[in-house]
Amino acid sequence: MSTDVRSPSFAACCGAILGLGIGVVRPRRADARFLTSLTDAGLPKATVTVSVSALRQVPRAVPTAFIVEGRRHPRRIENSLASFVVSHPAATFIVDPGVCVNVGERAVAQLPPVLRASVRPGADVVPTVAALAEQGYAGADLDFALPTHAHWDHVCGLLDLPGVPVYLHRTEREWVTTGSVAPVGGVRDSLEERATVDYDLDGPPVLTFARSHDLFDDGSVVLVDLPGHTPGSVGVLLHTSTGHVLLAGDAAWHTYQVEDIRQKSSYPGGLADVDRDEAFRSLHRLHAVKDRIAVIPTHDPEAAKRLASPSSLVP
Ligand SMILES: [Zn+2]
Image (cartoon, helix red, strand yellow):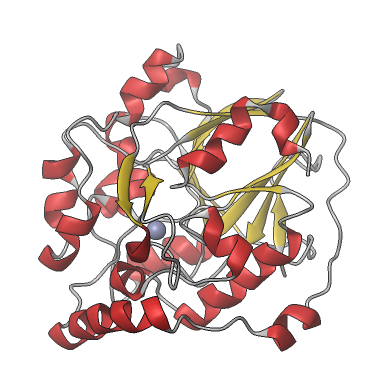
């Protein structure tokens, strides 16, 4: 799950909660014309493979109606605050370091009250720094961190990882640092006074995604454009020995959304997505390639299990 930015207005909150009820019975319909208009530019040519694993996290069961619009079964699905470690021959890095120690006080307490209840992690949530230690990593072992976007639950683990540089999409950095509304929940605290490398999506289309950035210039880690949830959201396309994996951030909160082209539920999704129309288009782009690559939404622990079973990655 993720959260936003501003303190939502009373009207916005009421609208989101009203929309939740409407969405259960009348979900937004997929745009068949847009779907058929998408062209597939193909996968990047990769000369190097990487490995990727999910760090341990404790999922919590949440009502499906709060995640996927129009989906009634099963009644509850699991949601977690996952992070991933990627090993490239030239670097080891973490994607979405999302949980700091004392996350309730240091991050969630900054969020608007209307959102706190729906996103508050359980008491047994595993801080990113602890999950890294379980796998034998200290902060010094990481060459950098790569958030898919700058919501609190994708960056606040950095609070316990001082000195780890951050790679951030320039569009996202500008949103965080100079936008009229700023993400809250420890986001600026996580990024301030930290070495950062801004990148642009200056590369060609990849699959159905309009722009890309090849991080190592070898096709193994390619960042692709997934706007809508936040202005600069990206997916991390990884070339593994058993197939391509796309860490999709919060472009979808659950695989059901990708399979069925169902947007996030109005509450809290309507308060979390910066641009619902753009986010819905990004969801179409994911749907169009779901049979070619393994799409792993950050908060979908069932999807992340595929990383531990490499044979299940091959579509
Ligand atoms: Zn988010």
